[in-house]
Image (cartoon, rainbow, N blue to C red; front, side, top):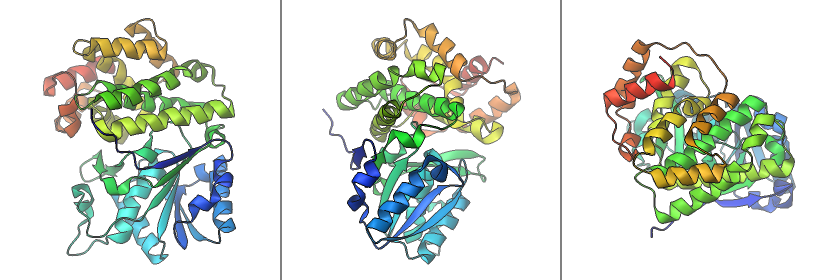
Length: 369
């Protein structure tokens, strides 16, 4: 049995920030990383600022994080955090702000100079330890609060790429369903599918262990309870908190296993076609499960049982129901994308063998080309 490393201390429940404001005493000045509106609309930004004020901690709000933040954008954030003399960061929002905060924490302590280049962030070899961080997720999807990964957009390479480092695990995370209670339904669905992909990819890939399997199974059971909510579009606060719990568990799983080709193949759909990350993964998930079934049949059967599906084809129907869309994509495009996606590290973690032609074939089937 392998040991699990999840160094993030997780607090969960109603009014969890107000009830644990002393846990925010991690320095003299906080640099709050959030999106242009999500932190404010969810109420999480207000609660964090109140908690900091109660503890006599000053803060600076950096609300310039866009969806799918680029490496250049997060470097600018690092410069600003350094200018503000912040000694810890707080990430508030969905995957984009939480991932951005990790990169900002690295650049805040490691300026680009003759000894450290912009793309050196992918080498996990930092002279100075990144700033410590607190996470407040407002969507139940990425699980970034419990992973060592940060996914960044690289315009130079025309794709998205993640860096990994144990030094960017969040120190603490605060989960309260009220922060994702009123997000748009399409966002809730996209992030839900992203969490499903994390659980299924982590459960079936070659790096899975008995310990990660236990966590994945718990996460699948939790997410399975709410698949009908995603169809109906109705949620209670406690249900949203439990969805955050399931997403957090999914993060714990991929922190150890990583993802598979579902994620690497999904990146060009987001970069070139602006398809949301969760939906991009969802377009590929059924075909991945179908192929994984040939080598991991027992596990796929368990996934279906945990999620409450009778047979594999039900997954395809469900995904089409909650992820409607009609993207225009050509065979020439996917053939070009695959030149990059087949080189991704997570190809090696895939439970079934895949090569260039195999990925192109998957794209054609999933996108109905």
